[in-house]
Length: 259
Image (tube, rainbow, N blue to C red):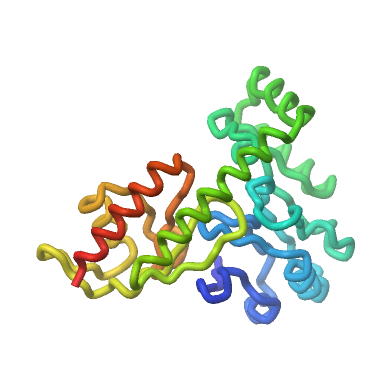
C-alpha cells in the first residue's frame, strides 16, 4: 500500500499531479474519502474531475470512494467521483446510515458498483458476516424514505460547532489549522510543540501530544500517526457546544504550559 501525503496548506486534498506521480504499473486500487475522516476535507466537482481525468489514462485502476459523511457537508451539495461517465464503471462507493442518519450503533451500510464487482462482494460477504437484523433493515428503510429535515438540522448544528471550535483553535499560538468543509473533525498541524516540555515530559510527536492532552487537560484526541500523518492530531467536535468550549479552554491551557 502506498500513501499520498497531503498537508493542512492544501486542505489535505491531493492534486491530479500527485495522483499521476503515484500511479505505477502495479497500481490496482485508489482509496479515498470525501467528506473525509480525519480531516473533514471535501472535494469539489472540479477537483474530482481533475482526478477523474488522470484515471481515464489508467483503465486498470479502480477507485474506492468512501462517502459515509455525504450529508455532513457544509458546501453546496455532495459530489461523487462516480458522476463521471468515463470512469463510473470502475468506481466502488461505500456509504451507509451511521453518520448522515446518526445510526452509528445500527451498523448498517452499503456499497454501489458495477454488477460484476457487486456480485463478487456479495459472494465474499456471505461467507464472512451474518445478515443485518430485520429491525435494522426496517429502520434504514424508514430513514431513506423519510424527510431529510432532521439530517439538515443535525448538519446545521455540526456547522455551528465547527465554527466555534475553529475560532478557538485559531486563538491558540502554534496550532496550524484549516477550515474543514465536512464531517465533524479538525486535523491541526501541531509540530510547533514538538521538542517542548512540561513537568519533565517532552513532546516528540503527535501521539505523545495526544497522550499529554489526555493526562494534563483530560481531553481525548487521536494522534495523527493512526491516519498516516505524524504531524497532526484528530479532534472531533461531535459534542455539545458547552463541552467543546470547555475542552478547547483546557487544551489551550495545557498547550500553554509547554516550553
